[in-house]
Image (spheres, rainbow, N blue to C red):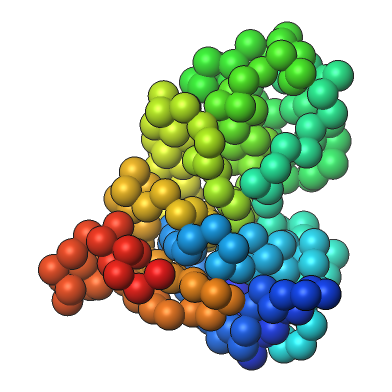
Length: 230
């Protein structure tokens, strides 16, 4: 049973067509790159899978179920924009998230805070963008979620934070048990993480496959393939 499956999914907004007949099946237990330029439909696709938006038409399933409270309970979602209460401290944000999700492991969160060099008593309003990116990762990776959706986790973040985020994903990923889908247009730094990749352009999937196989077949890096097909 796939982690997610989309069948002929369209998403239209008032003056735009974000997704155009997307058919996609993502295997469980892998780190998957959802690669495409800004405006290609990556965020829309992840929001639909997270249950935060509905397709205009088509069918979406997570672990063989239609999107519901049950699928939301096993899905952790990192948005591309901040969704914190700025008056909270890091510690309070963690406590709030812990109260929301039964699968949140507080000890893991505090370990990650130390690893990512966050001060638990700092207010979120005082954090840099890179620090807020690290905090979003703490909140997502401290859950035992079977599906983790990360929308542009590296965008606009300083190089040290990017490195810390990528290393934490690699270290904390539960191989074979957890599926992580990372959307990004910054492929060069992140491509070493991906087992499978999905290239999206103008709301359509233009290429999918195993990362190593695509590199071997085309004799190019994923970053070079991205420039070619997107």
